[in-house]
Image 1 (cartoon, rainbow, N blue to C red):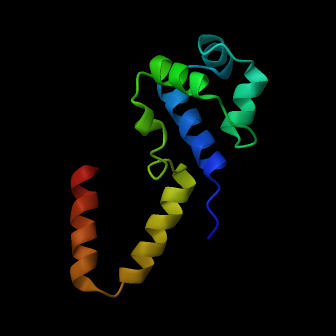
Image 2: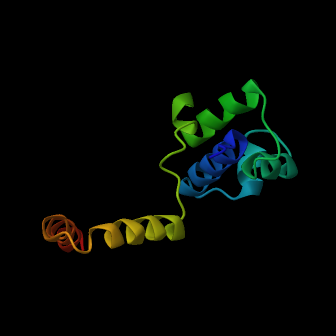
Length: 108
């Protein structure tokens, strides 16, 4: 499986930006780059300078390493598909199914 770091990084930046409630326009302005440049970064078609990365961490109020934590960024559809595949794997395993059932029941 090929990992496209630019795309993963872009998705992560977009996720963090949205968590802060910032539009692309406002975020681009805050980090002093063009909105089109930010769009290229968020879609993985471009990369940023270290100065821009530093500004991003300041505006997003995160440590630099947090921008590179890609694994937690999943769409709802990706998470749902993952869960359904795992549930299908355990549907005949009473013990594991009970554990998953208990977890889900307690969080909802």
